[in-house]
Amino acid sequence: MSVDDAVTEPVVVIGAGPVGLAAALLLASENRPVAVYESHATLALSDANSYPIGVNLRGQEALRRIDPALLERLRADAQVVAAFRIHAGRRQVAELPSGTLLATTRAHLTALLLEAAETNPHITLTTGRRLTRVDVAGKRLLFEDADGATHEVDASGARVVAADGVWSATRTSLAEQLPAFTPDVDPWGVQFRVLFSRPDAAAPGMDPACHYIFSDKGIYTSTLKNGVWCLALSLREGDDEAAFLGASEATPENVAALERYVTAHAAKAAPLFTDADHAAFFGRGSFTGAVVRCPVVHVDEWLVLLGDAAHGVIPPTGEGVNSGLEDCCLLAEQMASGSATPFTDYSTQRMPDLAALGEYAHHLMENVRDPDPARRFAGVAFRIAGALGKLVGSDVLQVEGKMFGPQAGRTPYREILGPWLRRRDALFPVLVRVGRVLTRRRRVA
Image (cartoon, rainbow, N blue to C red; front, top):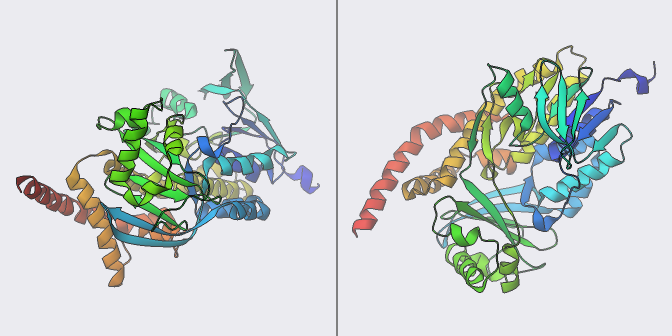
């Protein structure tokens, strides 16, 4: 038997985002025929209509396994992040070194993977097919095209990889048909919208090699390779500024309000953006999501959930695309192992890490969406406690350094986040109480 004939088991992948495409490429590398179905008729992959992401060593390893040249292309196009600088008000309160994270956009990463998939002879890509239902008993996939016509795929002879995102139709179908499958889907309660600068913008004190976090309003500032700065603004439900931050018209009033808002809450970054940049902001969409936690991520040996469909997080974790790309590596390893139960083996191996990551993501989500100043104080104080702990030889709270800092690697999430969660449970409630006392004193004064 030749190598080309050794593996013929077909795979169906639902979703052509970074995780779906990475899974397709890794599984096709063993000569499996892979059929990818994508809901969008065309993939509009423009940085200006995307959002910034950081690819850490987990994500980079997935790209290397697909093709080392793919990783080198990303490195050539991305900005290496030297450090994260965290500000409370106008003061920097902490700095987290990195040196391992590659800053890019989701659109750019997807475009690299899509180009590789389109030239892979084992992969077929069908666009304009929106999954509407998974029939578990019949092992059928039902899709709908832009004209409303239904298309049925008999997947009884294939393995199905569902990477259809945080609002996964696959996951919804499983929850409807499998009584024991009860996923927890907790919407963020906040949207993010990105303000982009012109190329090579500059401002005093803003280092393009660093990312900046302005914690009082959850503003995140990053750079791309071409010198474009990205300012991700959070829109919380019920906030006074949500009216203009969510507006779709660049009226003089909205543009002026946006400029005042950035100046007030991210003063160091404000000079990066022109009136034209502010006006363009209102023509861009926002994005949101949910923290997703599933009790299991496979259905027998027929279907497996990957990425946001299985474990949606929130951007401050820094692990959204990276955890999904790592899923692909681990699944490919199990598929190549020769085991008769690769999906079961993958789920057994992965679930403890996804549980820890989900709890961490939920904690960060509460910090982002809760306007309580006491909780915000606790969040900043907890970060400072982590920095002080490092000075005295304790790195329990230094999870960022282990995920995208100088110590980053592929250490399982359970080992990184388990000790952090235990310390969080003991310390964070105390800091919230201190924050409430300080807030009351400030109001009285």
